[in-house]
Image (cartoon, rainbow, N blue to C red; front, top):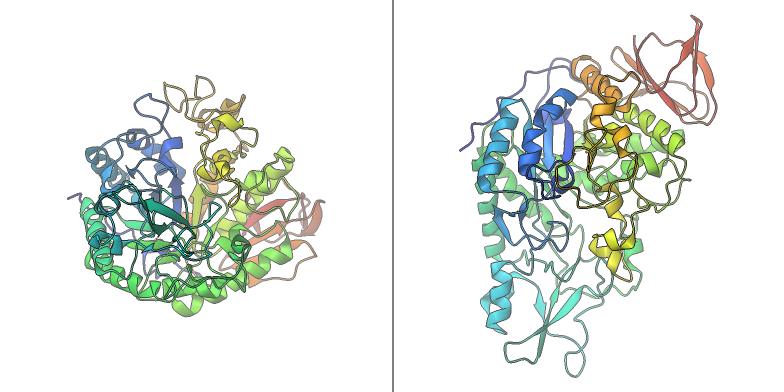
Length: 560
């Protein structure tokens, strides 16, 4: 068993000075997408050895924990979110020994490790599912998934009208061992990802065992994929709509396959396991819900510790909209005693440096590059705002380099499964998954000796870690300075509230103990009174003693 990381020293909270109830309350957590982070064996695909070799970089960046996207044994029909064996490492990423070494090294460097867990569905190559198909109708293993007879005279129609998130029906018909058409099985995502039936006790037992396996390995927590999807409405009723995807994340989007109240029993049982282990092990919900208030249900005191704030991620670069979502988020989490989380990018959405380069209202998957200079300027300002807010912040690999999305990947290079389907998600997630650049030169800009699994843009080296390290004004150095300041400033980090100060239209001015953050979201420079001593700014600013001129799309941190 890996020796567990010791608990960090306590600090101060904006609301309870001198006290924090857990390291996750104000953690900065860095998401690693393993296949695109670093390649340790030169085969063009990132791996655990590559991640392990770059851990000192993450320590120096100043983050508290590293979240690893899936590295389990998988046919890779959906980039590892189709798991065939939850206790094995896919050979493309290494071995269990590599995972153990990574966890040990991370702990030695003061970093925690969070791993992805995929409980809503397995791969169709999972042993349970393969046996369920091979044994045919009547197999007890079929009860661990959602197998149903079809409708119509010959069972030729799906059991209900549910649609896959990746497009098309959420059902695929099987062929019985004798070659005749058989029952259908449910898959809310790709056909290669059959949904588990969480009403079956064997499923719950299996995942409790999986939790213990990785906790015994020494991991510090789990990011729970599709945490809102495990339990389906009784009877799997028709939805009666053929435009179901538009209901996701809307106030009236009550779906029989998402955010059912029964999921909370699962997470209460998991919490008892997490609490048995030393070192404050945590669970983080990826829960797409209609409202922030519904998201708060996942982080009640006896359930998970954090939940992703997707409403914040999807908010436009607009002062009024940002203030509203910040207030709503803090207000929703305060009653359940959970930290609010803040995130701007991840492996499923267009990088925020590109989202902010485009007009608002285009969603979170955007196909156009937009105004690169504008996008970077806003992204830097948005980062300082995010890191000033009370709670925990998530950083997606490469955003600290100011990387844009790669919007011009040729179709033949794309690998996002939803890209190849007629409907569903836009299928342009590959753009945020292009391997990140480490060096100015080289066939893959330091990613690895064997090229990269997705083509990197020409000029990628100019944004590399090597190019930006020590460069005054670089985005990497901005992140390093902001995270370092957040770690030591008594007014930053944990907490549940901000104080809004009067501000001109288009500006945000928020205060925390000994600290003020001013944000100009307009396209023009604005002059306001000096607020104290400048701690950090996302762009150069000028002062004349009594007033400061804040450029367009700029955030300034002050100590007061």
